[in-house]
Length: 387
Ligand code: BMA
Image (cartoon, rainbow, N blue to C red; front, side, top):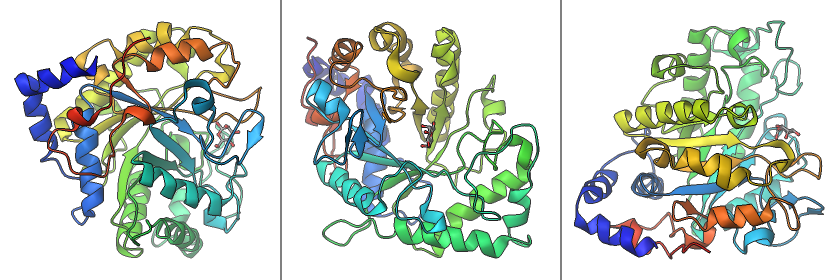
């Protein structure tokens, strides 16, 4: 029961964590009050709870699209996830729908709804290539030099600014009823340690990548006056230690969330690799006063009936470091042949229900409003008793 954890908080060691969480600050010195509150609440929850997230949760699921207030996870457990993943790929080239056919108007409405529910929004950006309008994916063996051309001074910089302006305009339209920008975890230039996207390892130097990242964030903060962004850095696997993970890190003044995208370790039955990766990012977050998050994962079609309680849970429970991961975001439920979460009637649904009943795990129904100021957030958690 959560109750015993609350008692513990008052009892001692965890109290210092809660106090520390009230002092940490987002990378953006001009971050809005609500963004600061969100960041501190995430930090306060992190040592004890892992929030569950799902990409496009409110937009569609297996065999449904656009139903009001529906998610596959709500169908399965009675609750929406605590974290809602989005992707704004397509806004940059002026499309009405994102690359997975989610209308941007509907995405905006749902993001605001999530904010009003007190949940967490996080958005990746599968950016189109500003030079040719093609999508993010490129040949992993043939280098393209888009990044060098779109940086300041490059021949295609103006094309990049056009795309970044459309992105900024959308992000600055994410406002609450009171007209205030809603906080958002923004996760641009993800999985750069691989070479499948045009900003990946093969396609630019370390310096170019860092400049691309820093330029993007500064431009959104300054030109578009966005003071509501927590920025996530999320390499894919392929690092053996903190130094390798940080090779293209854009800086503490830019990044808030120390992320990881890892679809491989559990798929390959190597939980020890996932534990190592999560401990590396959690250690970096602890040392830098940031949040660590498992920013993308999943097993295609959930073939393993006991994936959640037998594969993932033991990893998350492994150590204080793995437990301090703030959230796990599972990829989208596109259809029966491409989904990363159970849906109603799916063979792993029962296991997922057992998983979310574990005291470490939080869904929307037991996360407190993340935008309220709490002196001790744990006392606001509504309880999550095992089945
Ligand atoms: C991939 C797949 C694609 C999708 C892309 C961006 O992993 O899910 O179908 O278009 O992510 O969301």
